[in-house]
Image 1 (cartoon, rainbow, N blue to C red):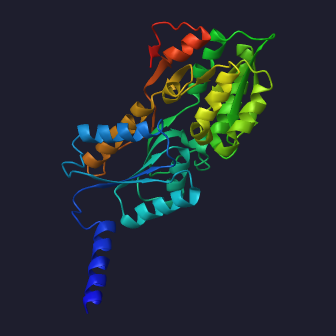
Image 2: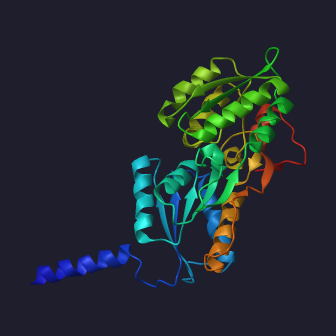
Image 3: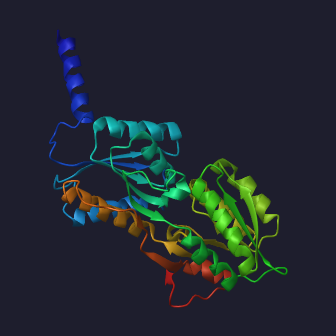
Amino acid sequence: MKYRYLSFVLFVFFCVAGCRTADDSVPVIGFVDAFQDETISQARVGFIAALEERGFSENKNTVRIQYRNAQGDIPTLTQIVNYFISEKVDLIASNTTIATITAIQRTSEIPVFMMVSPEPKMMNIVNDAGDAPENLFGVSETLDYIDTAFALIPEFVSPKKDKIVVGMVYNQAEPQSINALERMRENAGRLGVIIEALPLNNSSEAQMVTMSLLNKDIDAFFANPDNTVFAAFETIVKNCNEKNVPVFTSESGLVERGAVAAFGADIYAWGYQAGEQAATYLKNNKSAKIAIETVEIRKRVYNADVAKRFGYNFSTEFEAI
């Protein structure tokens, strides 16, 4: 009898822990990170900060955030989204492209507020008329970041031969990575640049692939913002430093981790902008008219120590980090 009672208590405990029973009037957000990364995590920090400034705080019990991280595992990511759907969360916040795509593929009813994701057509999730899913909101990025960030390279790098040779890796499974490569190739001729690109679909191959690129006598490396680059960035930077090859990027967080400079979206501000949207949606009892926005804050940043190493001087337009 004692054990039967204990089993009942445990059953109730897990039901309460896993189900929305505390207060149905408090909105619940399911926040999913596709993988663990110190740069990408800034989007979640910004998202939560925007909510808190607009009256949605976990500490004050005015919102509940169920946070999950898929750790780069696709089946786990699918399970997380399915769990949010079963919990009937009020909205899903998706951080990075693969999380957004997975959420949209699994639900057409729960609003999905994306961040650190490209515009819908770049994710191949628009219909025949070119329209995004009706339940997709949040903040996306266009390929403008390629134009701004990639154009930094000719300003600072002197070619070893007739033209600057820029190396990059790309993830064949990520649409925005392929699109970025295509955009870079479009800009290459105009900027007097040659692109040397190799696929990198698994961060465990970063050492071998990066060394293969460096053996092509590249003048600079461009860190394309995709999952494998984020995961393998320390390996990429280490190898490039050993060959005295500067790394440029579009992500300010990667500058903190060793790239020389970036002109692109601020990840914290990206998440903050998405959080503003989510707060508007919740404040208006889910009836607010919200459209997908483009990331608003792009900034020029450089790593002072790395810049000194390569002898680069940056104007006051750039912020040292």
